[in-house]
Length: 168
Image: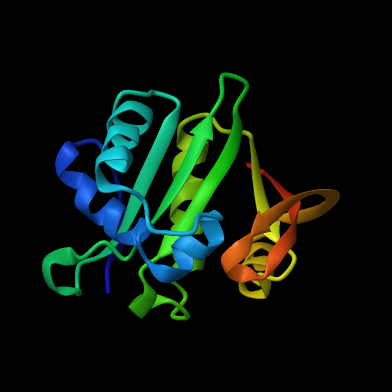
């Protein structure tokens, strides 16, 4: 198996982004009641991702998967001070639980370091045990800071704790 990340840079990359955003669990964690409108998401994709030099999306692919299907993506914003705001990690449903979350995080952290990132900030629900365990395993530190986010499809309010990782 040869895993690699691919920086999203073309309109042709939109379809995989849309498919991942439409997954039932991705919709639930987004806080929205339904999957995104395709035209609105395409507009966001073009304006926020393709035309913005501060927002990055990387797809995770595996050379042994037919057609090198997009396994998942990691989105983040990088500011001029080297602070990275992780915007989301989504793994295609059929590949969840197979270690791809850790793999994309490791590969993207290497890319962040190459881009000049110094500190990564991410927010994680206190109920998302898999993500929290993965973050701890990868050297992230949970802070006491949190925001309450209403996720109707997941039963209401959730505490999202701030996690930080310094890039070496």
